[in-house]
Image 1 (tube, rainbow over the protein chains, first blue to last red):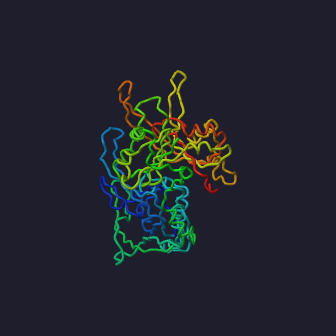
Image 2: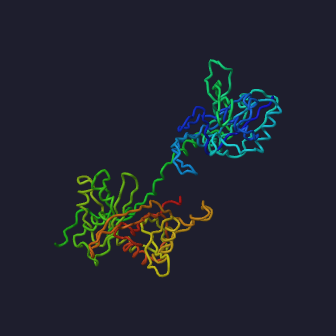
Image 3: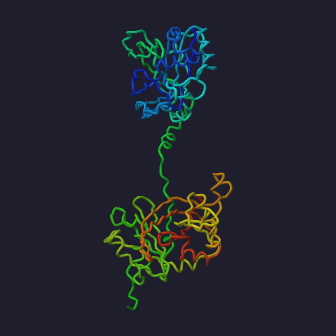
Length: 261
Length: 238
């Protein structure tokens, strides 16, 4: 067994698990169906292909940089007929960074790694309009079968500016979403276990997800800069320099002396 | 000559009314001179400036040939029973200026140039909009105005370009107020960009500098621009 870790970072991401019709919501972390879809596309599998081998991979994801949720009100017209398409509301995660990991047979993971490096269809982060920033593949860990264990050890992947913002802390606590056996009392059900990506009828099954947290060292930790960090966090207006032109002049009495009027 | 200092009580509506419009402040300043009729083109030059040192401290400086009476301003925008205005004797200070003297200065000005987009277009007065050009405007005039802005020693420069002189420019304000043309009676909009310069100068020509300090520098002198004041040079911190 091997584990393939992927860095999912980009200006915008969208990971829907319950999005229907004109309201296209996003989860706060990548869904299994979204990542499996990315891998299947990289392999070049058609939509109707059997994906039971990919769906059987075990999956975990870590939230390295949560990002912010943004809402887009989208209108569109049909390019052929010119008719208005349904007005939709689309949610995205902006400036987020995740590390996802899949575990499976050595040969399959090796194939996936090669496919991600030379993808047949370009990878995107949950929605076609969301390209990844930089290469998606992060590392391949051999002789490992638990993707969550790999994510506990992986270095923090957040953007440099985000790490810089936390430089007063030696380590940060990240959320880790791992797969659990169905019926786990700590888990929550999420309908993102892909059964078929066929365009005529996409199907997903329930999957149990357990949320834990993991402590990861901060490579940009600067001890003793605690004060500095808070001081620069707030902009203090610079007062103008003092200027007293009257200081070297002689003041005249307020009431004018009678001058002969 | 007289230099007068008046502190506006910024908590009063009357102060805000005046601070909001250079035109109203101009009218209030000019009405402090009993012998000057409104609109008199031959009246002696009066220069004024607002120094906004903080939210609560707004100072009005006036340099004038006659002694002003600011009673109306105190009643409208000051502290009528506890604080009035201070008038200082300015002539002896001006006479005492000597070549080579080093002073801190402050100037609120309206840096403009004249542009035309094509050769057959008339030239139009246009404000300088960037700090670099605004500083360049002052540095262009320093010789004719009788002073030289001191240069920053090479070891204290922090930028590749822009801090060659001991000069800062700040507080750019863009005004746009209405004015009725006295000749035609038509309503006009007056656009005005003002900036405040702080820096340190060396006197090169006391006679020219005396003219600068009493007659003003640049345009829009009626609207609080062009009054330069000198203060004792601060310790070598800049």
